[in-house]
Amino acid sequence: MAAQPMPALLSQLTSALKRLGLLALALVLSFGLAACEAGKARTPSLSADDIAAIERQAEGFLAARDRLPELATLVNEKDWTFTRNVIHGPMQEVGRQMLYINQRLLPAERPEATKRADALKAALAELDEAARLQDANKLSKAYIKVASGFGLYAQVLPAQVQADLKQD
Image 1: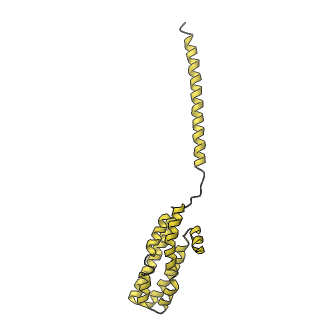
Image 2: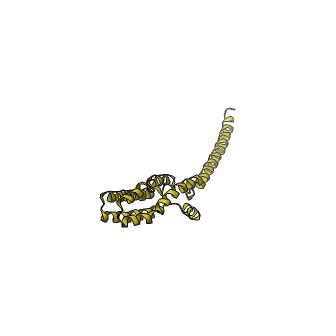
């Protein structure tokens, strides 16, 4: 009599293990499919808040860039004092504006943007020092670096920001 319940018990145990195995397989497949769906390459994009913040800072940056012709005239005339006044006046906030823009860019774009921002800030410092020393040769070379730096940094602004600012 004791021998009969054992096969019935084994049969129930085998059936329960099969159901448990099927349940585990279903769970693994469900999570696997969900992971595949989540792993699809999505193009990273900026949020509306990031775009708005970049636009606010880019307006100031571009306003300073628009002063380059005036600065070129001052450099050509070797007007040491007013050259420094433009650097310390209208262009003073450029470093801060680039910093705020860089913080809102996509992580992959930040290193290049930081490199370009640092180069522009260094060029502005060189221009200021050349004007302070009243060195016409260094002043002209530094101005070229500043103008180039503004152009290069403007390229890191997101296309949507550039388009929105052109419309204004």
